Length: 621
Image (cartoon, rainbow, N blue to C red; front, side, top):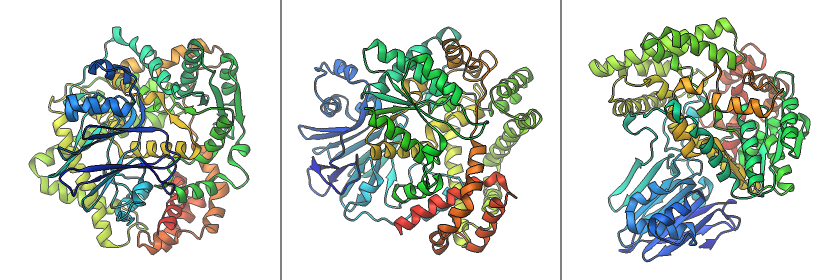
């Protein structure tokens, strides 16, 4: 391993020279990179980055002493099982293997993509890394921006899981393995909780397995060392805090540290519940008020600054505030921060389940879904009734039937209609060049074609399971935005020198929840039933049995209203976007004026989206 001070913190690069009869591997590492190991066994070089969960199990299967490091163990597994060895690796990690004698490279990202993995190729050199910036720093790797992807970002469309905002750098998607030999690349999914669309539903008598899987997931996240917990007042982070406290005390480890942020305004402020949970658990708590967390400069300025340093435009508007909270935990000895991310994705029932209920004429089930969602969210009753019937029900059914029919009987007509619709959907201020606008439509059409092909293969069983519901649920496994959010979270941890982990994204837990029927997820008439009852029992008097999900949309709107216009004018608007031909400056100014003038509040997020992207581009151009 060769240390390189010019690599970003936590970064490593696995470099393979494919020009010789025996391919040679070299590993470059930043001086601050401590979360990976590498080993060479015979003619095989292995790097394992991140956290391996099943080291003892792998050692037992191989008849090995569990003493060797992760990389040596995986090298032995590769000797025995070949490429299939990566399918047995379980953790938040990436695995890269170079078999010099066979002239093969195998690179696998963990099952849910919680650890980053990218690749690039320059001539006869293949580069794999956990960092986009580390790859861009390598000789010959172009930093040319992927402009169509930048435009798609502003549309909140991310068509292709493999692409990044740089043409030369490609992403390995979650649960996928890249095979590179003399004949080129091959990418395939190696892990799927429902292979070929066949879902083996969790039975009611099996639901008690959730508790053990959740405890296991939390214990894995506590393994790196003393932990802090981003403790909100919601069911997800509270359930993590409760299990983490019990686990730490059972193993004699230090109690977790509760790290809480009090959002402003009565609608989003959960401080009484946050303090009540920490007190009931007997945890030390760091509670930041909004002004302390945001700082004197304001949140949006910090978002702009972070985007200039990030390998992608910042997605998490709250990151600067949580940076300060995490630093407080680090100052008190925490090396790991746990969060409740993933609870919304895997504990809740997607409202698109309404379409499948309507398809099978289950009106009783539809009424039950409506009531369950209404009791669990702050929604307007009449408006949500319209949504459940049309937006989540009849509309996706009609679209599915139309597309399916045209795809089979008149694909050319479908393509023509789709292109026209997609071209018209691009806002007037975005992609003013007709050629670029046409390319955006072609890209999305290509994405839909790929999704149709994948859907046809996955849905060969016909209507034996809720197709539209699972199409939505599956986005948690495959949507590019999920990978990007984990990459951003990992980048945050590297900057802070900490592990940022989410127990609800444990692969074995997710595989269980993926197969849990909606009726069990909503047992008792409210969402998140699998944790709600336990949390309500553990913390009586805090209202968890009837708690509804709190959204911070009002806080965001106030933030844009307070800081948006001032920061927009101070930041010289969007010169890089306009100069690159990605937006039409005058049209965009009119659009932003409408938003800041409160004449179009539904698109308030566009302001900070534009500022973050502009900052990212200025730093790169």
